[in-house]
Image (cartoon, rainbow, N blue to C red; front, side, top):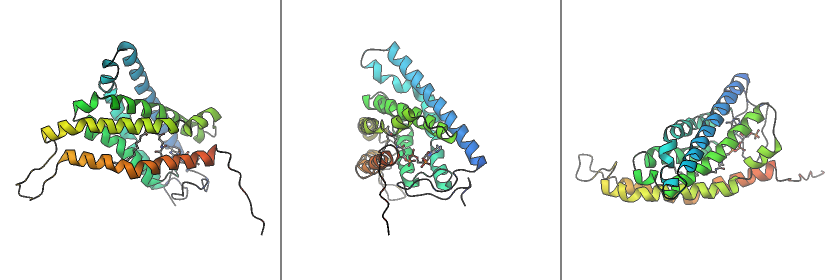
Length: 245
Ligand SMILES: CCCCCCCCCCCCC/C=C/C(=O)SCCNC(=O)CCNC(=O)[C@H](O)C(C)(C)COP(=O)(O)OP(=O)(O)OC[C@H]1O[C@@H](n2cnc3c(N)ncnc32)[C@H](O)[C@@H]1OP(=O)(O)O
């Protein structure tokens, strides 16, 4: 039995089996989702204030990361706990997909934006922050309501519809931000190891970044179509045909 008293991870297309999380896990998840909703609302607030104060390009996008940096890093990093929740079985999410989703963003923040000013000020960064923020306010508030046995249809519809547009925007933004870090990473030889060295091994961070960008090609469709299946299951009006023996 998993920590929260519910069955282990399930196939994404099956309905939740069992009673849901136990009381302790339930309380924790309510707290977690409320804190994360509030955190992302704070990101949105700072984002909007920045746009209103700097309405013309390039400042309108180039300064967004600087404005939201601290709060964004805190709340996006807290999403690592989602992998733990899924791995412990207290939520029925797919562990691998959750890990890809969370790691790609955490890596973008700490491995791309944090070290490279060019990524911070790129248009891509402002696009993905906008897409993440809208998604997460809806997602965490939806989970909170669901745990409290309320599922406002509008929120549920937004949760399983907005991704159709926000995923491509977010992923394009992430790829643009990584792309803008390639030249500075190569020029600065950041986090790289050149030969000769005692390990007899070379590592070039900008090539690693190219590798990360290529990883999006097989992984992103899996995430996207997972959400398409979830949408079909939850609000798609699937008619179940029961075969008579
Ligand atoms: C070195 C690093 C290299 C990394 C390289 C990686 C390459 C990666 C490429 C792809 C990158 C993607 C980057 C992402 C960009 C963006 O996000 S852009 C913005 C748009 N984004 C979205 O819309 C995100 C959509 N995706 C998701 O929601 C998740 O990530 C998911 C894992 C795909 C979701 O899957 P799942 O968990 O199955 O969805 P749900 O239907 O919401 O949940 C299933 C059930 O689990 C319950 N649950 C989940 N979390 C919680 C929680 N915190 N609290 C309570 N309950 C939770 C949920 O209620 C569902 O329960 P049931 O209804 O009972 O089934």
